Length: 389
Image 1: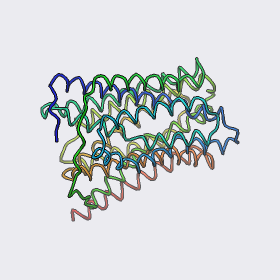
Image 2: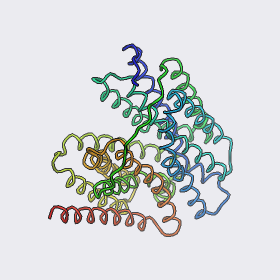
Image 3: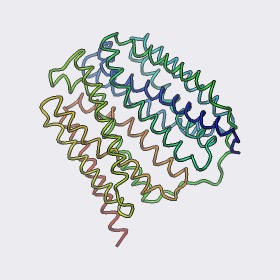
Image 4: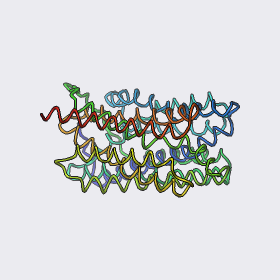
């Protein structure tokens, strides 16, 4: 049953839920910007084996998140959402702090896996906003929440790289712990209690061809977006950048392509014709495959960053367009199934990147992603033509 909060309290609660989620997204990305460099520094293993550890530490938590996401949704029928939201923040803060004290890669991996299991906090935030928002402000409030996460993702990498370069690798972990603590306190003070969610019934996923292709295209688009950070130390070393210079460059590269991803997703989403979304999605995926291959021919950090920004600018738009094209009329369960492709892509991206680079080279990695993308698109187009015929 929907809560009937005073309007002012509801608006204030939305802002502080969004602010809290900004804090958590910021902290996750503060860590992600320098995590490969941190792993290289503390690793007692050979370079190839260290590369595999980077992939596991940066990618496996996403698979845990995908498996745990349905559980978090079901918990809202048994516990108050605000308690769940705050609990996820509390334990994430503790894990950030513990990461700053370990120099063991197995322990670091274990802590990342626990973080993956706690990854449902954003889902709880979406639910809380839907409960306290009046119908005429719901879309605006959900957009605010989404933008708060995006802003955290954009601001985190350069701050993390700067802190690690100037104050040491442990400082971003401590900063993350403090910021999560502040977010937790603000949530406790300004966000009202919300009732438990009634269990959804009679909701089934209809596994038709469109839904499965929507999943596949979202999956490959997410790999485009997530494969790079785990291999940045290797890539930047090839450009002659190491140590503090490499750390700073990694942060600004991530900030640059995150910015173009946001801009591209917004602009293309506004301009794309609603009746021809399938064609637009295919064209964007093929353009991303072209830029993916072009990365190999960059001869410095600047040209590499420029190509990467163009790549993410086109491929980021695939995700919302897929949702608009394939999930129409599917209901929440169908949308949730397509959204699970993001979790899978988040896990496969860094694992595939580090495994391929450890056993081969960057050209093989770039071609593998590009060829897989083209293959998905061609199969999608051929299937669509057969269906139309």
